[in-house]
Image 1 (cartoon, helix red, strand yellow):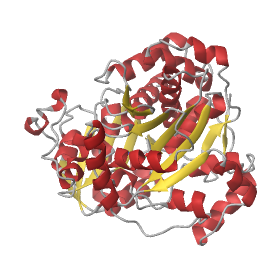
Image 2 (cartoon, helix red, strand yellow):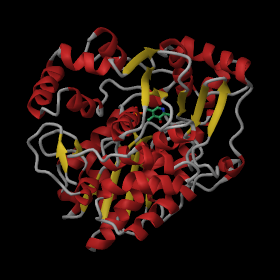
Image 3 (cartoon, rainbow, N blue to C red):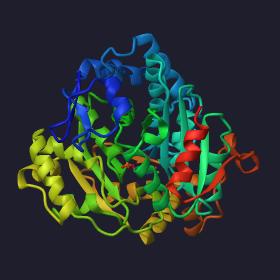
Length: 462
Ligand SMILES: *Cc1c(COP(=O)(O)O)cnc(C)c1O
């Protein structure tokens, strides 16, 4: 198994290289050259297995023997032992045929833990094997930096530097990052806004001379290993609800499209899926593209579901590659046009997508209404991201006979502000985190100056 670029120009890579690389040199994203298949018997035999064992079986063909089975099984087991629920990602039945797949029982209370707990350990494994060290740099507006930090805190061969805008991150989100006191974790509060922080990270990737040859690694959502880890919960949930003997549908609160693309991979591997519903907030490029063939950028809107605030859905390129029959040249041309001006997909690729995907966009006022309505009906308190999914599942589902699985991407305590706005008194943190506001914090405050930030990274890496 090798990995090829969606733009067809960059060299094919091994699994190890793809984990360490991120974006392809031609500007594309890596995807597996062949899609491994799970037979009906393979799926049937997964019924009743632990999440870690299903994870091992689903991911093994992608790893392609580059990690021996015992070691890989141990990496997977350790990654998912950090979750506070024995089922790792439990299904919660809301009504006769609508389920929530709770992806928020990891260390930072959002679904990104599923991928990052694995990715940190995979990076550490390959670096150890090579006798190398690496530096991770990332910028966060608050919500996702903590998942990267938690994923790397135990990694001996990695140092992680996460930049956040000083005094512009909620207290819970800041403390989720800054109370991790591990020697390889560096939180940097930038005297500027999120864009300043992100610009400095981008500039550092573009010119890595300040690290004197040490590898700089990105753990953002285009890393193939993150998609791979997310395929697992689609398979596990499908099997739990009767696959391969019956079909299921999924509704996915979406932004960069990494999560729902993983679902699509599970489908291509053989999971019987009737429909994928893409839920967006007011940043609705995915919905506009599918519903109106309007593939264009619009200005960023700040919403109550901030982890879905995007202008461009980077992983959508991976689905386009499939919709265009794996024609890297066609994908390249389409995306070059898209960067320059509003554009549209070809009719045939769009029809292919519409046969499997539906979409629905949910604005802020509706998010608040849904949080109230879902609580009234089901007694569940939804976080604002999951609320977009709950509404989209109701509005866009093809039928009511097929079980609908809405992905609950965050715990409501992580986005308590929206829940309070919806009229609830607040949301307590889960028991294992209830002392978060008393924990010791450590972070450095730096001006928004590239040379100061790079000097800090160069001096503090181990
Ligand atoms: C990142 C995130 C999303 C969006 O996921 P994508 O893979 O970018 O589509 C949705 N909800 C929450 C809570 C997230 O953190």
